[in-house]
Length: 394
Image 1 (cartoon, rainbow, N blue to C red):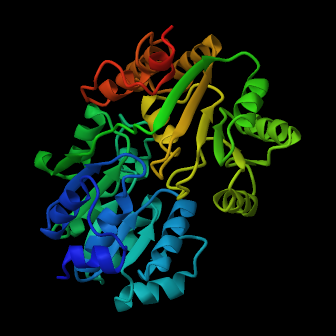
Image 2 (image 1 turned 120 degrees about the horizontal axis):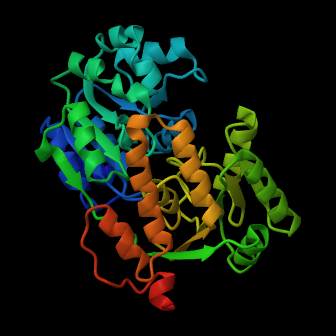
């Protein structure tokens, strides 16, 4: 087994691990199952890439989005890591040949494929170094982005009980963490939680009046790349058009756009120094753009977990960044209607609790960061000095 510190320097160019990375990598190298809760920008991918290189075999990475996989493969290629994905957008025959020959360090697959009988038979023919489950909150019914296919991963994991499994997510409250541990067969002592605080992000929450005007004014005063989250595809298109009409380069991103347009808009944003992307929540998961200076929500997000994850796309380089949220009372009315009409009865109480937690944040007279961190089980100081209520008490 290769020394992880040597790999850290020779492959990744770092002199030392950050935060809990060394703790997570150490457990995986010992063959122990692990759940790592690490904030956006804390270097989750290194926690499976380093063990994948240190251990014999190929690491299997379960990941929910093709765009996310391809982003991470490009980053791995740049480091000289042999990575590929098995998706509808790839040359299946060529990838399977590389996988079976043991040539790959990393193979990315979606949960929908990883749970098929055909893929399980394929994986049985390969020596696996580890199984990483990215965006692991998707496995939990209590999480903010539940994906039923993640629940079906148990059979694949049971086929390879001796292979260390590493679940990773940026957002999981205590109930979600317990559910992930139970669903993925990870012992309680395998839970590693990094701090949730992102002190470089300034949180600002305002009541919504004319959101187009408010966004134009906000972004006129703030250069640099920005993401605006919109509650629907139509509103994402409208916001992009309004911002573009005011002279700031802006493009939309949502699941209704043709795949080639989505890919083109995403690439333009990643390569830009001043562009705005107006997007639904389809955008951003795992996007490797460290210099986003502003993230704005034009309406309330689905939950505090979603808010934390989406605002966490600002300032991943550690430099000052801002997260703005514009809300109105009707946002909560519509959210309650959605819960009553679209959510199964057994989940409604939990969804109402999440909505109430979001209301507590937007209506808080005190420190916003303290409300957010307490939700994730931390005990922060009463004031942070870097949110609107701390800087200008109401």
